[in-house]
Length: 229
Image (cartoon, rainbow, N blue to C red; front, side, top):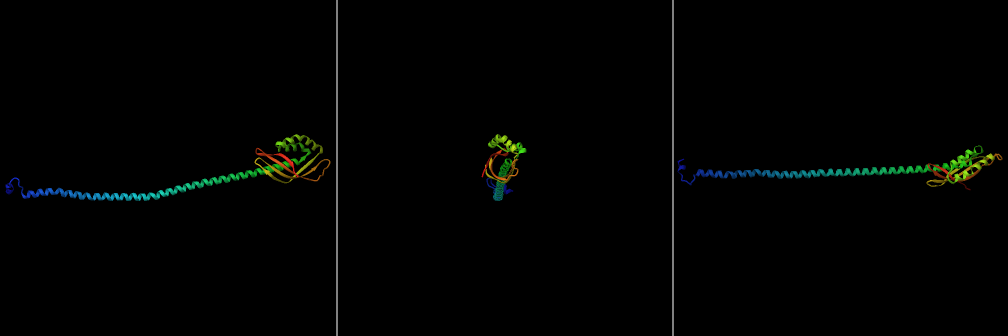
């Protein structure tokens, strides 16, 4: 201690200089340790970023098949809907065609039946029921034929009653000659057996008639009658 006290001002002892030197170097060492400690943190950030990129890539790869599955499902749904619509349209069209065919067949049957019945009405006359027979003919007639027969109905009934005539018609054959939307021509072959007061037994006669039939609402009536060879 005496030596230290005796040292001149401005000069430091060797021990004091050594301590100061050590104090000056310690912060540098601490800074180096701090820098070294920070380096692993930077490496960790890089690793985390790489992991995030890999996770994003994997998520994108997983999302792509899911999107494809949704696209395929949507296409299958659309194709199914189109098939259902086409099937419904086809079924409706076939049903409508079947309905039209049925209606046309029913109309042909109606025209043929009216033609046959018209021929029977004209060829089956009993003098004891002449008024009712004429009324039946008029009820099944329309147009020009109705007007003409109505004008001749009274004289016709009188002749039948005076002759005590009786005729019975039998349809031998009948068929449609032609057809339109609202009418048809029906050819009828009819056999007529006639008797009267002066000739009770007469040979049957064969007639051929063209009966014109016209639609009247939901029904059909005789509009004209022609005898054909």
